[in-house]
Amino acid sequence: MNLIQPIKIAVVGSGSVGASFADALLLQGLATEIMMIDKDMKLAEGQAMDLQHTVPLSYQTEIMAGQLSDIAGAAVTVVCVGQRQKAGIKRTDLIRHNAGVLKEVVPEIAKYNPDGIILIATDPVDVLTYGAWKLSGLPRRLVMGSGTVPDTSRFRYLLGKHFHVDPHSVNAFILGEHGESELPVWSSANIAGIPVHDLCAKHGCKPSALEEIFHETRDAAEAIIERKGSTCYAIAAALVRIVRSIVRNENLILSVSSVLENEYGVSDVALSVPAVVGNRGIDHLLPLELSDYEVGELFVASQKIREALEVADFAAHPWVMAS
Image (cartoon, rainbow, N blue to C red; front, side, top):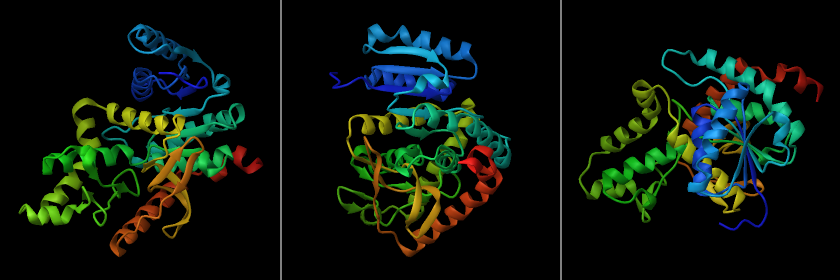
């Protein structure tokens, strides 16, 4: 692949998600430089070394371990630090722990790379996307989260499997929160322009079959965690897809977590809604027409995120108070 200019991608957090993302990024040849960063320098060095040995089998890429100060010039900084979502961990404990980690790293990211895009992968991603925006002081277009991109991928896969079509032909979104209150947008879900509900009626499937597909989508992460301890491949692929749209300026429509300013009647909170993603970050949010019920569910999700933001307490951080 011929790149017009060097593209540096920084990965903060070298655990399973960060390493899986870096590996997928390398195999697609999207970066000329990948910087692995972790509080555990030995882990970052080990991941960088392992990735270096795949370069002869993939694309010429410089892969190094470094400090937060080394992210200067990165087109995108992908944040994967923090505690993983695990069975038995209380949501409030996860929020407090990972919000604390973000309070340490995000101001440093903004300090050393004020023009780069910040992409949050750490859960709860909507809460932390909003926190990253507050802590960084950057324009909202430069801060986004992986949001419901992996959920939407799962949703399209299961719908394609149900209707025996390629998932690429399925046009459907999961919006709102990446979590229990996420929303399947049935009102616009379609395959080749034919509404999914019409297809279901035509083929004699019960509406309950579609609800089961959504429930399987929503509960997929929990089911995977129960079996193997964590998720990493789908989120890594989602992150690569987002980064690809940024560095290639593809302007792909993705359900990234975005800070809203009266879009869908919601403000001052981050939720996943369709966004045009390119080399400016979030170019703009698309006003998808939702049913009254879907609007109500989006509002419910926003209230849940607000409650979580009180637990995270980003506004109380000294760096923010001083800015």
